[in-house]
Image (cartoon, rainbow, N blue to C red; front, side, top):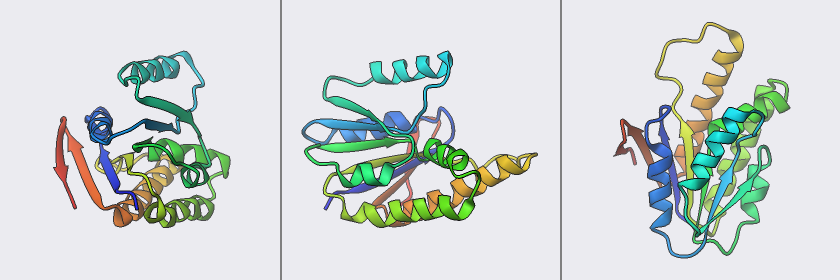
Amino acid sequence: MGRIVFITGGARSGKSSFAQKQAEACPGPLLYLAAARIEDAEMADRVRLHQAARGERWQTLEEPLDITATLREMSGYGAVLFDCVTLWLSNLLFHHREDQARILAAVDDLAATLPRLDVPLFLVSNEVGSGIVPDNRLARLFRDLAGSANQRLAAVADEAWLVAAGCPLRLK
């Protein structure tokens, strides 16, 4: 079975860089599973910067919604880095028209799948609940979903890390 490593932190905390370094310590080809949708020039620039920071060992696969099915079919990689859970949740939030039950069912399906993977998986997610309470219903819904998803995924992970100011702190 593959090792599951959950990595969370705030925006620009260094969590993705930490996850990439951890994955690169695994032998063999590497897969970057991206949930981001490129819908404007600013996001396209961000994606280009991330891709430039990865070396030739990396292959990129973009999948905005069906992460679980994609992971079930992964084989032949030394490690997979999924970046990021919160972008995936955002995609699900709009795809399922804010249906909390369907979104959390997708999270639970992913959590049930993780222990059966045969490749090391590094899950990156934003910690969004440390700030002020958002001023609108949709932002509060997203914050709550992200908190629930992070708890559910960290619970099944072999390791969990919090990265703040570029400093990783092992949680479990």
